[in-house]
Image 1: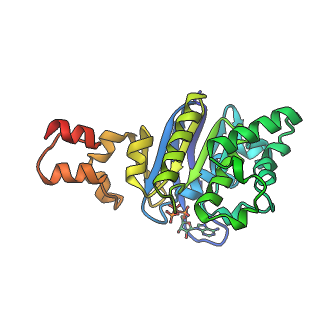
Image 2: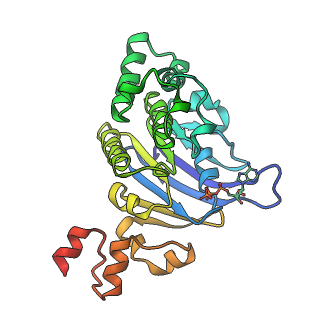
Length: 265
Ligand SMILES: Nc1ncnc2c1ncn2[C@@H]1O[C@H](COP(=O)(O)OP(=O)(O)OP(=O)(O)O)[C@@H](O)[C@H]1O
């Protein structure tokens, strides 16, 4: 069985009349780097919230490492799947960076030594070590986002899900994100992101799932997806800029990077 198995999952919010997710099935293995893309309102956030039990399946099921999310609390599931909220203000509630990052890991009852080392490592990966005594609310948005990412990394979960992590990030922030994704992946963790930033996808992820209207309409290698113009049109998505340029000048070699472009030109 796959590390994450989603079977025929459908979901409707109590206040809504229509299904937000419609019969979704998906398998994800340990160590995969997966990006979920799709237009606004496609159901991406709703879907990933179901992977750690923040929302429970109504029809169908989500099984992570043999655990059905219906049978476990979010606190328990968080050892397996950690979710970084889209808006850091939905997640932060401590008045210093260290306590905020340590909060989830404390709930998992690690020893003091292990807890300290996990928090230190998470701060190092997110370049927050020198800000550990700061109030997160005094930090700029981009760094608050890293506080929330660090708090999930510190829980040492097998799967790290980041919802729109590039929002507000400059070049430095994008480098930090790149390095931490590589670092987590080297440890064998699964990294999943939701993003509207196609360059971020190309530079950091291998597999892409495309969602539209609560359904998965494509799932595959990034090169296949980003050169499937029908799928992109259906999901109202753009190719990465360099692929778009290659296509415009009829360099039809399924290019995904500047290096490939230069080599083929
Ligand atoms: N708490 C909620 N109660 C009712 N409806 C909701 C709730 N959260 C989201 N929705 C609705 O569910 C649908 C899917 O929303 P969701 O946030 O999962 O999409 P998304 O693909 O992540 O969008 P975005 O890219 O804009 O974040 C939308 O129509 C949204 O309005």
